[in-house]
Image (cartoon, rainbow, N blue to C red; front, side):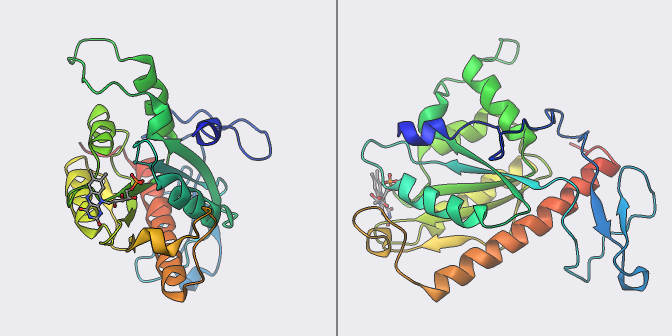
Length: 256
Ligand SMILES: Cc1cc2nc3c(=O)[nH]c(=O)nc-3n(C[C@H](O)[C@H](O)[C@H](O)COP(=O)(O)O)c2cc1C
């Protein structure tokens, strides 16, 4: 658990500090999109040009000047949990992507109170700290077990503490269960995130019989082409949405 807690820093792997992007609607980083085919691969800045076109018919959105910041949120806080094995594996897969800047968030280490404050009360320090990390993210991955056909209370608590931090950003879900693939937990999460103006994407990563998929020593899952495809397509789609929505937020504030 402490190992996961140590990885909650927002410092990049190369030791550099992240830009201050705590105001989600006004990202400081400029973003670039490929204009439609006729204009070749010219990259234009969403912050400096009105001629940016989101090419809805193509996946030819190129990596932007700044990598996509993805927060992977581990939702299981149970003593003896299996979740870190799943979250570490998924984070390892995301780290293979050079265009991703990963922030691993362990709700067991986040220390969020389970009692919400009133609107005019100051936010607890743990909430402020996690809020800054969520606000800095361009996209979210929620790694969640299925408990009684839903997601754990710790995940709902974390969602409810925040609001605009989630908005106009894509969310995918890595769900798992001892028997089921966690798809009921995922379906309910999608419904909740919709209320918060997040964008739950079509592609998710459901993992059935999770204890049989990973080796007993917690090492990575057995070779599984279907799971590989599921991860790749979910990550590709998440990054597409993250870049598109980041550019959109740069062009105009999101309407709450
Ligand atoms: C309270 C509770 C409810 C559970 N409900 C389900 C369930 O509805 N479907 C399922 O497939 N597994 C269920 N399980 C089994 C969990 O999926 C399994 O224990 C998994 O390892 C939980 O993830 P964790 O170890 O990261 O907490 C449940 C486990 C707990 C503790």
